[in-house]
Image (cartoon, rainbow, N blue to C red):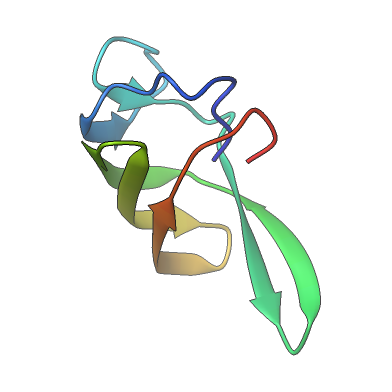
Length: 82
C-alpha cells in the first residue's frame, strides 16, 4: 500500500470502490517477493488494521489479490517513500 505521508489515522480499513472514510481503494497494490523476484498485485478485497505507538506503526492485512488471498504485516516508521 502507498501512504503519501506519515500522518495515517490508526483504525481498521475495508477495501471498497467508494473511497469513503474507513476504506482503501482498488488503487492499492502489494509486492509479493518469491525467490528474490518482485511481483506487483492489485488488492481487490480485504481489511487492513493500522495501529500506532509513538512513531512506530503496526500494519496487518488480510486481503485478496489476483493470486488469491494474502496476509501481510509491517512494523516500523512510515515515510513518504514507504
